[in-house]
Amino acid sequence: MSLRNTSALRAVCLAALALALLVWPSLAQQPPLKLTPTLNKPLSALEKLLGPPRHVGLEQERYYKVPGFVRVVVRPTPEKAPAVVTFQFAPGTVKSELEALARIGAPDAVLPPHWHSHWSAPGESKNDELTLSRLEESPATQAPAATPLTAPKNPTQKFTLTRHFLERMQERGVSEAEATEVMEKGRRFYDPKNDSYIRYKDGLYVALTKDGVLKTVVRGPIASRWKPL
Image 1 (tube, helix red, strand yellow):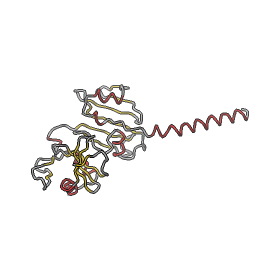
Image 2 (tube, rainbow, N blue to C red):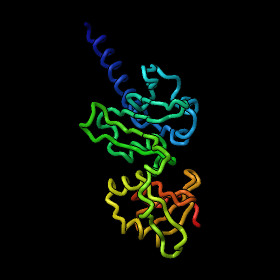
Image 3 (cartoon, rainbow, N blue to C red):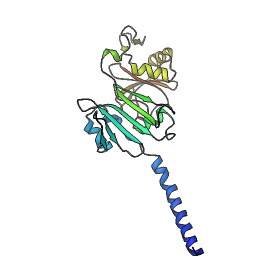
Image 4 (spheres, rainbow, N blue to C red):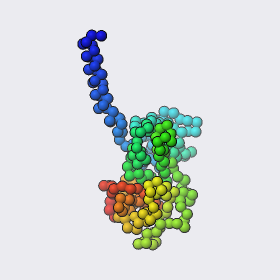
C-alpha cells in the first residue's frame, strides 16, 4: 500500500472516530421515556411509546427494543393492561434506582398509584434491571388499620400506610419518627405532574394522594413545579 493510500485510510479512520465521539454521548444519554403516565392505562397507550413488540411469548409477555435499553419486557393482565414492566440496562450504564426511574420519566421517584419498583443490584442478573409491578388494590397491600399515621395538628385526618411506602422507608433509611415529623411539620405543596400532595421538611418529603394514601418517601430538594399550599 502506498504512503498516499495509507494517509488517506488514516484520515478516514480519524474522521470516523471523531464522528463516533460526537454521536456516542447522544446515544448514551437518551431522554426520559416519559412512560409513567401510561402505567394505569391500557397496553395500547404504552405501545404508542414503545412501538410494536418484536416478540410475544407463550404467556403473552411482550418484548420491545427501545433506544437506551437492552430491551423492555411487558407482562399484561388479562384485561390488556400492564401488570409488570421490566427495563434492562447494559451493565454499568445506570448507577442507581433513582437514575433508572428518571430514565423512564419518574425523576422524583414518584410512581402512579398502586405501582412498586424494584432495582436489581449489580450482579443479581446479567443486565441491570428496573422492574415495575402493579400492586393488588386490596387490604393486603396496606399496613394494618390499627397503625395509621395521624398528624396531631389535624386529628381527624388519617394517612393510610401502603406496602410500597413502607418498603421505600426501609430502602432509604427513613425512620417512622422522621416520616411522622415530615407529616406534622412539613411544608405543604401540590405536585400537578403526579397529582400528588407533598409534605417537605429538611430534605425529606412524603408524597400522598388527596385521600391520604401515602405513595412514597424521598430524600431530595423541592421541585420547581410544586405549588405551595
